[in-house]
Amino acid sequence: MRGHMRIFVIGMIALAIFMTLIGTVESTDWIVDDDPHSNRDFRYIQDAINASSSGDNIKIYNGTYREHLTVNTRVYIQGNGTDQTFIIGRGDADAIIVTADECVFWMLNITPGSGLNLTGIYVYRSDDVEILDCSIHHCMMGVYYYESSHPWTEDLVLYDNSGDGIKIHYSPYWFVDSASIWDNGGFGAYSAGSSNGTMVNTDFVRDGLYIDGNINDTTSHWIEDNTVNGRPLYFINNTQQASIPKNQGQYILANADFDYIVDTVITDTDVGILLIHSSRIGIRRVEIFNVMTGVIFDRTTESNITNSGINDTTDCGIKVLASTHCFIENTTINDTTDGIKVDGETFTEVLNRTSGYSIYYEGHHLLINDCHIFNLSDDGIDVHTMNYTLINYTRINNTYGNGILIHENTHNSSIYRCAILNVSDDGILLFNEVSNNTVARCDVSNCSGRGIVMTTDANSNNITNCSVHNNTNPGIMVLSSDYNNITYNNIWGNGNYGVSLLGAFGTRVHHNNFDANGAGTSQGNDNNGLNHWDQGGEGNYWDDYGGTDGNGDGIGDTAYDIDGAGNDTDDYPLMDPGDTSAPRKIAEFTILVTISITLFALLAIGKRTR
Image (cartoon, rainbow, N blue to C red):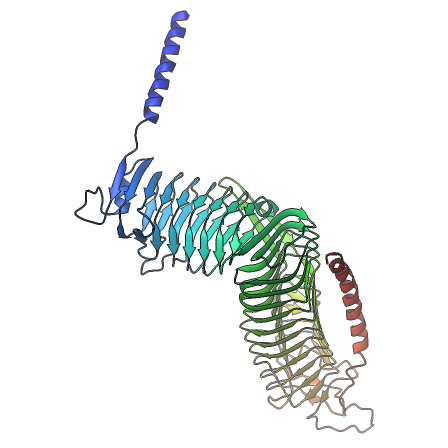
C-alpha cells in the first residue's frame, strides 16, 4: 500500500511540474508593418491574428491599415499611438469584430472605409475585453459590447459617430474611465440592460449618458466625477429627498423619490433629464434647449413638469414611457421633431447565454394641461398604448405631422378644449384599436390633411361640441371603424366633405351645423348606408338644404341627401343652426369633474415636492 501511495504522490508532483511548465511557455510577439522594407512578420493585421495562438502579442507599427478584422483568438493588439496607427475599415462591415475572451486593444485610431462601416469595435459575447487609449470616430457606432461581461475601457476618444459613441448591451460589470466623448449622432454612452456599471472621469461635449433596463440594471451603477459640457453629470440612485443642485450638465435619477429639480438651464446633451424607476419627482421652471430629448419619464410614477420650456430638440420634447399618474403642465415645447411622445407599455429584457426573462411595465393616467406646442417637424402629441390620458387646454400649431395622435390600444382618453391649427397632416387622428375616447370643445382648423379622423377599429369614440373648419380635406372622417358619435359640432369651410364615412358602421351624426363644406352635391358622404345621420327626430343643419318647413316645427319636410354608394339621408334636417352649447353642459360637467379630481391629486403631489 505504501508503494502505491508513493507512486501516486510522485505522479501528482510530476503533473504539477508539467502544468507549471505549460503555464510558463512564453507568448509569441508578432510585428505588423505596412513598410515593405521593415523587419516585419506580416503586412496585414488579419494575417497576424490568423497565425496567433492564445495569449500572443501583436505589435502594429506606424501606418494605415485598410482592413476588416475578425478577432477569434485571445490576443493583445497594440498600435503605436492614435496619431500613428490607423485602421480603416473595408466594405459594409464592422471594422473589428471580437468573438474571443480577454482580448486587449491599445493605442489604435479606427475609422470607417468607403463603404457602410457599421461599428468601430464590436465585441460579441466575449468577456473581459479591454479597449485602451483608442480613438474611434466617423463610424455608425464607436464601440458596441453585446452580452459580454466585464467590458473594460479607458482613455477612449469617441466622436462624430452617426450612432452611439459606446453602447453596452446586456453586458454587466462594465467600466468606462477617462473617456472623451463628443458630437455623436446617438447617445454618447448607452447602457442597456447592463447592471453594475462604473463610469468615472469621463467628459461629454454635446453628448451624454443614457441608461435603460430593469430596476437593478439602472440602479446598481457607480457614476461620478463626469462632466457634460464642463458641468457635472448629476446621477443619483436609490435616494429620497436629495438636495439636487441647479444647472448641472445632465440629470439622471434612478429609483429616486420625493426629489425636485428647479430653476435650471440644461443645454447641448442627449437627454436633459432622465427619470427612471422613480416616483414623486417635481421639475419646476426648467429651460432645456439644443438636446436630443428634453425630459424622459421612464417607468416613473406621480411625477411632473410645470412652468418650463423645451426648445430645439432633435428627437422629442418630452417622452413618457410606461409611467403612471404623471402630468405635464404650463410647459412650452417648440422647434422639435415630436412634441410629446407617450408609450404606455414596455418590456425590459434581462438576458444571458443560458436563460432570459422579460418584465412588463404598464402606464396610465397622464395629464397634459395648458401647454403650447409648436414649430415641429413631426407630431405634436403622440399617445400610444396609454389609458386615461387627458389633454386639456393645450394649443398645437405649425407642425409638419399630426396635431394629436391617439393610437395602438389607447382607451378612455379625453382631448378637451384644445386648439389645433396649421398642421401638415391631420389635426386629431385616432387609429388602430382605440376606443371610448372623447374629443370635446376643441378647435381644429387649417390642417393640410383632415380635421379629425377615426380609422382602423377606432370604435365607440365621441366627437362633440368641436369647431372643425377650413381644413383641406374632410372636416371629420371615419374609416373602417364602428359605433362612433359625431354630435353638436360646428363644421364649416372644409375643402372636402364636412363628414365622410367610409367602411363605417353604426356611426351617429346629429345636431351638427354644416356650412360651406366643399365636395360634390352634399356636405356629407357615406359609402354603405349603415350609419345614422339623424337622431330619429332631429338631424343636422345644412346651409345648402333647399327644402321647406311647412308646419314650422324647425325640421325640413324633405330629407337631405348624403353623397355616396350608401344612398343615405338625413331624414330630419334642421332649418336653423343648432345651439351646440346646450348639450355641451353635460359633457363638460363630466370632463371637468375628471380634470378636477386628477389635478387635485397631482397638484397635491407637486406642492409636496417644491
